[in-house]
Length: 154
Image (cartoon, rainbow, N blue to C red; front, top):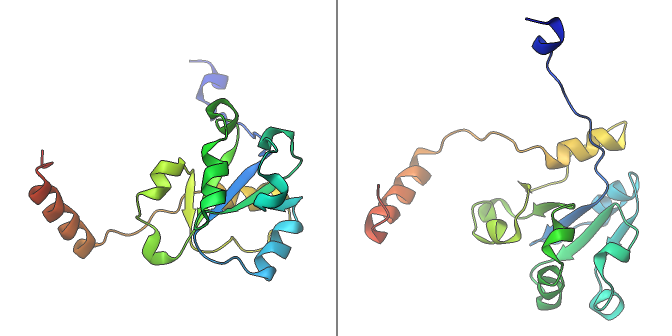
């Protein structure tokens, strides 16, 4: 076997755009942290409602999904465009397992932004990296009971 075949190939694909969908307030400190790594746009329906997202220049685009206008704007993004954008959900810890994350097609669900990093690439990687959570027996039992009652048990 060739030595090159045994090597692990890691692609370092730069992250160009990230949409952060928020279901909680984002603080000024968090916005300033994002600004350290690139251009931040906070969606305002009066300004951006009819502007296609692919015509905007940004690194981080913030939508408050608690607002109807923000949800509508997100729904109007063409799937072909959305496939090239990373979507992260910033929420309260009790919302981590809500269905809306799947509906949004998020790559990661977070309750706080990552700590400050030396480089944008590292910050973005931490923003998109899913954390492995420890098993929760109570949650698993409730979920299993729900599946039994619903008739989805397989």
